[in-house]
Image (cartoon, rainbow, N blue to C red; front, side, top):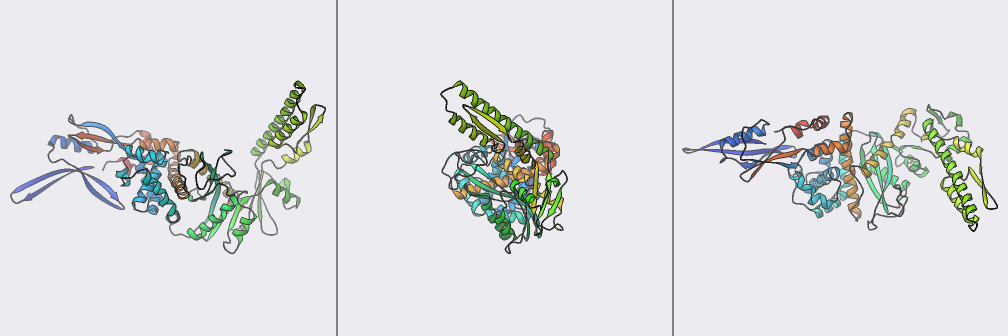
Length: 532
């Protein structure tokens, strides 16, 4: 903000005007608007106000009331980052686009329902000043989810184009799925299925997320809650080709995602793409039995084996993981032995108790502990004797910590180490899901029922994650958490001065050291903290 003085002569009279102005951005243009007319204010007050706007000390402002105004720091940072990532450009300039930015900012800062965002949160934020939108309510935000769902492909395509700047993309894409459960049963996409949240009896949706090799989200899709992992892959392959126009893809997914049908689809004339995945322990055993690989090849160092069909197998043994698995197996054996002993004691103390019921309990417990192949029980009168098959135990331990990465991509295009490391990058998808579901973006709880609104909500969460990941990457060296950084930015508020019923707002002249560090790391000190 700044004070503008003008002098105008008309006939024999000279007219003076003093107005308080501010700059604002409309698209790429910087424009000006009048905040208040100060012509009739005492000169001393105007001069003191001008000093204040420039961050200087004033002698006397007794006639002014001082108070904290609305927060603007976090939402300005979010807007600038959205510009850098191409999110703002992809959304457009319509009111719906601006409401989408409000939803993204609300998801990052508040993590509350749309009722709360529209009726409470916006009261504390300079939404009109930053996003240039006002006059909306809860229903407006729900309708905005419909708009987001309808325009999702267009939005994702534009963000993708902004990220790669029209270059031909020869890229690896990381893909995984998760589920998100509901407390209710009325969502149109909710269904009972394999629940990764371990919430038995809860309906859920399935969410598929694709990242590029740097961990940046590209597209997200919502499926019905009973959709199998492999059935989600085809739509992702189609989107890469038809929406993003990618010519060459190495699709990275875990062994539950990329199976024979998906491999055949990727290798078909429609795509002719490559894949990176792992194989199951049973499949490893089959390769050993067929003498394609040997058990002694599993070491700390990576070893590659190629079969006659050109399929490459990259072998490695994680000794730390092997130790973990061995300890876990021993703990399960001890728990199984302890349970058998407890059942024997119970039968001894309760003569009328059924030995057959106790046997069923023991067998169920051993099955839960996955010890049926190792521990056996033999009934003798009303007592169960336990036996441990050491040979089977050792056989099971042979593959502890062993894993095999599988691909058909030729070695000249993808060397052994890169192939192994890119598969390990699937951890980036798991991290993204963990962040989106349980931390500051909070995919759950979902307060919508309709299909399109569910998809719109999930898209908002993905776009919010893109922004918070950008923040995390930039401030990593400061060792501040994202939550702390965003909370610190959200404490940047205008200072408001009230004089004769008029409210004048100005940016604070000083910020805490950690807030300045965060803004500097983001490269936004000039845009957010400095006075104009």
